[in-house]
Image (tube, rainbow, N blue to C red; front, side, top):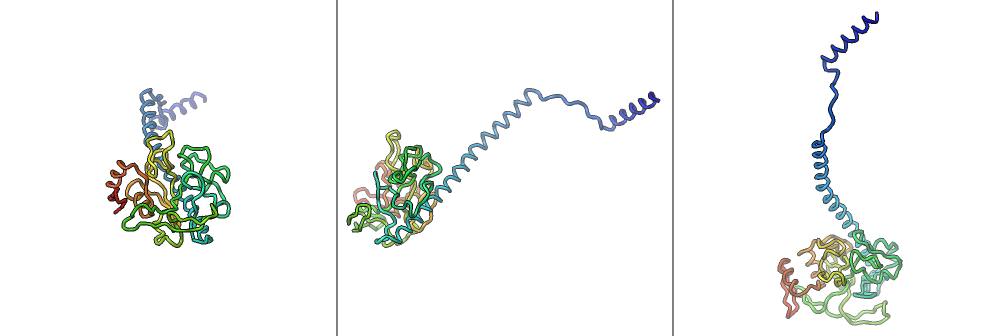
Length: 281
């Protein structure tokens, strides 16, 4: 009986093997095959990582523009209550880039004044009095710069701002000086910049930097800067003509070194006469 069962099982196994149901044992991968797979994976990673980094920076730029939009809305609310309709007065050290006037009545969250592409920090209200020196500065200071006044020394395509007299609550005095942008004197709020990514004079450890023109150490590097306009919207301006016109139509002079300035103006189709301080575009 056992011999018959064994013969039957052996016969069935032979029939199954002929039909392909029994598979042969596969050998392992060779070293060359493993190395080829590893090389392909490394190549794919090298291709994907820059794309992922660009996507992350794009997301941070959008978040930064959202911050500037919130700051601009706070300034609009401030202007509605100001006697002269001024968006925000110059306050603080340096170039007067303080935002403490907006806190806490109009801005309640310190995170709104810090660009996510930077290491800047705001821990207390006094940190709102000036912007940080660079994107890597974590000593205390916000990430944005105010362009609230109009340059009176320059002619912008046929318009030359004139000094105005206004009451400054930060000094408790009447002042006559370059006009500060307000609901009264801004005729085209859509194209009138008010806030932007911080870009002051180059810090001591960045001697080759340019004031008011994107550098590698600024919020979004040399690619460009976010700008907030008086109508409340904010958008990214790539380095070039768009950014240049945002400055000039906002009656603001991008303080560029003279030799470099002429080169940049030519690329942006802007004519500048240094003797008469006249811009045409």
